[in-house]
Image 1 (cartoon, rainbow, N blue to C red):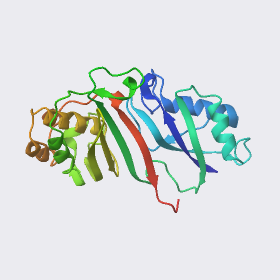
Image 2 (image 1 turned 180 degrees about the vertical axis):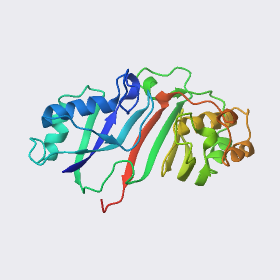
Image 3 (image 1 turned 90 degrees about the horizontal axis):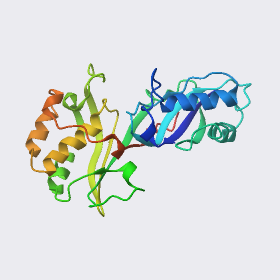
Length: 251
């Protein structure tokens, strides 16, 4: 029996989603929690890996559960059983039975990321772990113009960290926008997939546009491919959150 899990986590103390040899990752603690209620080791496959310090409200993952295991029968057993053994910064929010062909990564239709910038002079400690500081004076309209160029299929090589899927650097963006909300600027982007570090590089580069250090035309040129050194720096990890992963209802 295969189940799709919806997982939320504060990424501050983790080395990202994907299990690693020398650091604690979210995947590891979820697998260990499920192993305790299922009575055997399991592999939890995520919809995508998030980097160290990046958060998630709606990470998706699948896990195969033996039909005779204690938690196989009910959603409640998977959700609440796992949460009893997880740290407070990680929670399984939901579990749903899916068909055997379902795969958390390859079956995804699109993913939505959000990035929060804060222009407050002093950022209160309840927001600080989830926003990145930004200058009060920014050309937000220019940043919005840059975001309007993103929908469509582009070569995002200039925005990808080494170690990503450089053999297939093209991705399709469905929508992208900068939203002003009080003293925050929120970048929301939805696409069929994202290269390693891509969203943070897009934010860092459009921030340079907002500061007047780069033009919108220059940004447009980068959407045709290029070296990572041609784009702006990665914005800090703490401002980024995987909001949700969408699948076809037939799955």
